[in-house]
Length: 391
View (cartoon, rainbow, N blue to C red):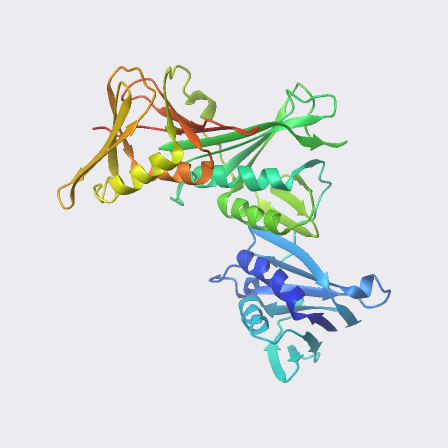
């Protein structure tokens, strides 16, 4: 195999591939990326294909290149990335010697890397037809607003991902369905949905008014989709699934991920339905107050108390080591008086991604879960449910 590629083009793709390839794998061959190219026609000989996998997630991408001799090769992902990013901004020439080595030259730099036999690399998932599509901007907006609420405990694997639902019940004549994303760690739950944003092409696995399709997608996959969606110039991202994988076509890149096994919790059953007491905060003022009060919150519980009375909310925290803090905010609240205790980190996580000038707190009493939502939804229905702490 022999080819030349511009440093900038190769480095961009290697950056994404290194997010997928496992750095500390017990299967050594998975620390490599697969490169392939075909010499011949102008179109075929101008593309270098690259792929990386950790068996759970797979990224296949490409970049412009001059392919002189067709072939397939494996190269160590991390070492190749470190070499390329430190090379001068010029073309890099690759040539295999036929005996398990690849030579790289760039201006006055020369490297020889061990290249394992590609026959030992695992087969990559076959990409099926992808009959669903959504705006890349919508994915960039929705995923960060739920991803933070996934569980950090690896043993709770059903909670280590995001439940993504395409619901065609409200599909219009243009066959545009609702998209919903939900995540929870058992203590809090984030849900966001947008109607009429998923296009259903012929062969889509949903029928208008009859059913919906759900994907339980690992959090690592969702974080990578955000990065890929932020880089693409494509307006639409196609997606679909087979029995074990979900696939996203993002411009010239295809990302495949194993679906999580198990049953996602019945989130619809825990959404508050009678939270009739509402306080609307100016978000900037609330964030600033929580930051200050959080400084002296107990380092174990991170507890802060919101004491609401007519016309104001008093936010307090205290700990034996640090002392006490009090902040008072003026609000439009008629009463009754109520005190609710929260983990301040749970509130700050939501406020950091909501991007709203005002935030609604909807509650029923001091022990029932409360619901937070942006006052200005901007076309999204975004809700965040938190269980109060015991005082």
